[in-house]
Length: 344
Image (cartoon, rainbow, N blue to C red; front, side):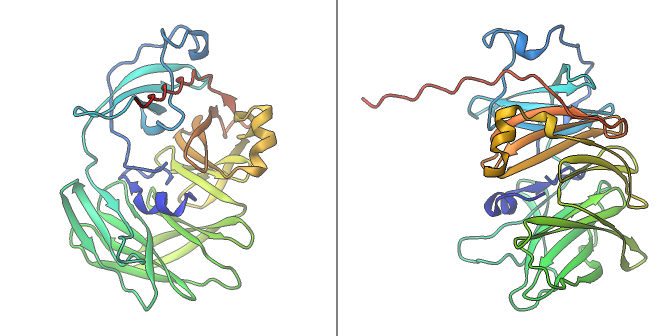
């Protein structure tokens, strides 16, 4: 998904491809599959001091638990023991059931960056912990740079997107042998390319390219056949977010809808609008504010967060693309902003 440039370069992709690629920062923690207890009242019916509240800039969608998306909330500032993270399983009607986050580090992540003394990124890092990373060095021409990376769900293949002066490329690497398996050139035609995102969705790869002239991102589906990369389908519309929601299905946020796609064929199976996640005032403001979506879920229920360009939470909702209709807002109690300290 499209993010501000600095946030994009600091992001990480987890083995479970969610948009993603989606919210800025490191991957959210894995979720402990402890039995959840359904809350008896909606969140906004409880006083702030008695029920959970959600930070405007500390809320994220986590991995799916038992077929349902998980909404996590970082409360307070991180200390020596880390921030207080609260997580809830989001149900189809918008109700939430508490669950417990785990502090386990992802099995492997991709980190990519631009250092202060190197304005272009020329490598990607395959990491199994904060301190254990291996460098991947793709084939680059003059002025080329690595702009995105994704690890497949099995942790065995890495996809790298490369932006060049006149054409772009997609490379697939073996995560164990650390060698390149395949490379495909991505012809631009008349479009300009500002962002070039890649995500493993099942065995397929979704490549999106943002054209600043049109303000939209087109999408193409790719698969690895032997040692060759082949494009097998295209996505019509402005693709802004994506996530796996089943063994062979992915949810894509396209324009004002969330659609379910079969990742083996690249065909849409159903869609529903997400603008119901916004209230009237937010709908009036949306043309003046850059909005991003974060997705997670299963075929019959997809949770989404609407974030502004500063990654502050606007709204949360659930939508059922296979059933159609509009998004149903999740009533959240927002945490009051902390009091500013008065200098002595």
